[in-house]
Amino acid sequence: MTFNYASQFIMAALFFILFSFCSWYEGSEILDNPREWKHSTYFSGDHVIDAHAISDLDYFVYAAKFRPMFPVLMTLTASYISLLTGYRFFKSSIAKKTLFLSGFGVLFLFAGGIVSNSPTIGGGIFQAIFLMGGLLLILAAALSYFWKPSWFNTES
Image (tube, rainbow, N blue to C red; front, side, top):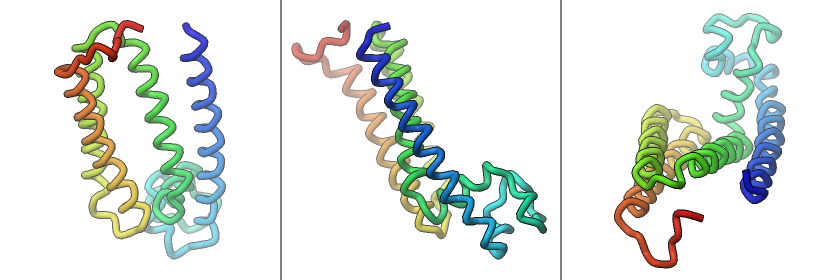
């Protein structure tokens, strides 16, 4: 394991933890908004009658819907960690790297389709990020497979 990979991974993991904590904190606002319990408590169930019955995972759902800055940063950081790890494992094989990037791009496009009907500001932001990210990942996969300039060394 090279120092460059390890340092990037550790920094990204620390940022992921920071953004997760901030998302969780902002999402805890759902406890003060009982009208939203029916629409944002996917992990707690449909019939939440007490604030103590709300799952901590629902805090992230609420934050993603109404305070999307930290959930978006959390998602981007998790994606960076995944891409960094995938590059580390598949850097010696262009075909495997292309398949990994394509699969990740399709996953992003699928996620963009899932949140496409959301009426909240966070849903619109996540849809745009997932669709643009998916298209960029598929473009990167095509470029890494078909275009091999002399300055682009995949063996380093």
